[in-house]
Amino acid sequence: MPLHPLAKAHLALREQHGSKPFEDLSVEDAREMIERVGYAIFGDGPAVAQLEDRRIPGPHGEIPVRIYRPDVAGALPLLVYYHGGGWVVGNLETVDFPCRALANAAGCMVVSVNYRHAPEHRFPIPVDDCDAALRWVAEHAVQIGADPSRIAVGGASAGANLAAVVAHLARDRGGPALSMQLLTVPVTDYGLDTPSYRDNAVGYGLQRESMRWFWDLYLNDPAEGSDTRVSPLRAADLSGLPPAFVMTAEYDPLRDEGEAYAARLAAAGVPTQLKRYDGMIHMFLGPDALPDMASRLRAAFAR
Image (cartoon, rainbow, N blue to C red):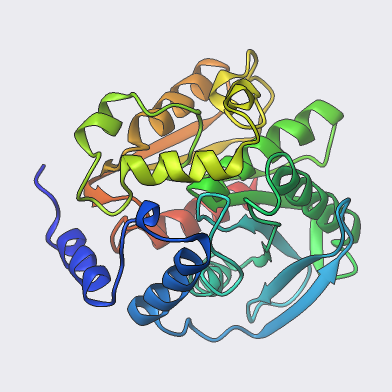
């Protein structure tokens, strides 16, 4: 379908507030832009009952996390959330709005993880941080008021890549068991040559050359692109992974690899739901996205 009017309006707002292609910026300017433009568009998120910033141990030093709790009594299910931004930009602030909204709408705790970023900390350090955060949450769930038997992982874009990779690591070592993986417009493969990359290379928010810029900053060497901790789509075996909800956007360069990953999960026997948001762009899926995520989380936690 044509580009949705809401997606057009979102792109116009980004331009109005000074958004530029990442590949035209320094790393420092890109980080400043994503915070400034994101806040200008989304503003403050809804109130939650409790919010706590803390630092947890990790293999490369302490990891900042932000814990959100809705106004719900008892030991709550929990979502470990990894922000997007090409492994380079983004932080706890850039996903504060969706984390607040998801905590309230899904009735779950959310632990947002500010893993280390490239190029200062290239692969595999962000993966190590994200995996350590999941293990810490599982080990300390009771202490923070969560239910250790109901933990999900999720994220958007590069954050969804990290969520998928962490799910593989948890499966391979035998835990923690995960209720769900929530993968929003995920990066699943090191490659820039799918039809969706060619069709949506320019003009829809995330550009093909922006992804090349991110990859160049994240990897130490292009040969690492074949590592399944970089490209989970290339894993030989996807069986035994947690149920997945994969969200893609029609006008997103990452659309095809996200849908290919969902197809491979389903073929491996993993309960998988895929939804393409027609007319939408990367990181903007329209008003249905949050209710869809919340309903899938509630259903997964109820199993």
